[in-house]
Length: 140
Ligand SMILES: [Zn+2]
Ligand SMILES: [Zn+2]
Image (cartoon, rainbow, N blue to C red; front, side, top):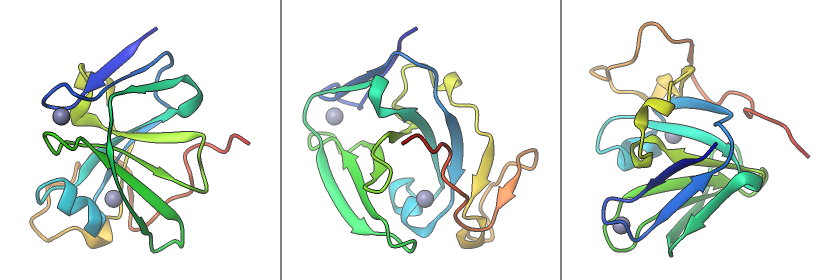
């Protein structure tokens, strides 16, 4: 098992030796910046089986939940790549557009729909959560 991906220019590559934990579409206000007006599609992997090659830039801030979040992007081409919460270092969220095979990212739910604009295209067949749902996995 090997899932691979990378940024637009190829300077940053990654691989996981395990299938993702879950994929969620996020319409929080911050994701609308990263998604060029749309939500983002985020595929969650366990960091213990996840390797990044290349150098990323890190924009960190404090989320509404109080968590310190890191959002990593390629400094050369600007592709948004990963996010992680300091409180949950065992998980990494991968922007699904960076997967070599985007079919791997099958969203299970849409979150933060309360912050989506009225014209936002939100999948009708998926469960919706208005704000932040519980963490997808709770490994130690
Ligand atoms: Zn790049
Ligand atoms: Zn978001």
